[in-house]
Image 1 (cartoon, one colour):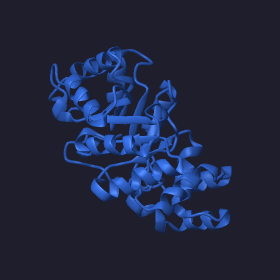
Image 2 (cartoon, helix red, strand yellow):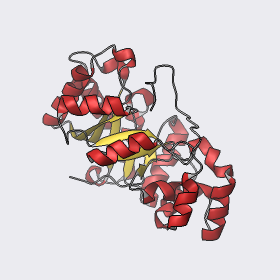
Image 3 (spheres, rainbow, N blue to C red):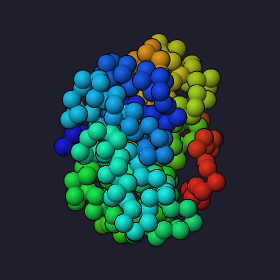
Image 4 (tube, one colour):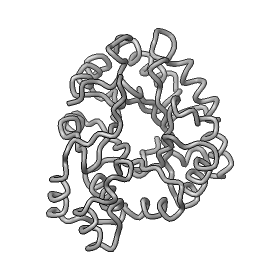
Length: 267
């Protein structure tokens, strides 16, 4: 089974030419991890571009996320089968529950058990969740048993460090993918990150990614410009000192970018 590369291409809000620019250039530069979701409405385009790229399917780690409308009894598996059709593949590397069911309209056991079944049927190699609180993660583990949930994808960047969730996931051996790792560009003008970047001859964005990577997280920044795609990839080579890591940790200020009205009560 392919291990998730710790730097991936996020495709949130990307369609048409921007998506084409991001994926084809990204794959050409050496990215081998693509993150999409049913609600992004770009799975068919992602599938088309993957086949155009010439990169063999088995060399790409592919994630999609099941939308909240597909949680009811008997819905999760058909929704994933449709995703597979659009993505032109017969398996996913990772299938995630995109958000916990708002106000628990659908009991967690209903959709998580279907997700586990999708894995048992070979539709996906690993399963996980996204945007779950510690209490929800505990509930999920109680439903599926320890070790069943491989990943949690959640917003993390220097301005929102989500420490309780991170600590809990690390304790439980749940891998973490940090989405919006650049806080929609807010980190780019952060003086401390710029100053540390100068020291290393890199950008504030690269420092932010390097800081997350150094904590063992996967990052999925999104970009359509070749130079930014290449720069994000180069963040893998940035080595921050323990002092710099500690300085960046002081930037926590709870600045959440993704907070829809159906979000859970965050930790």
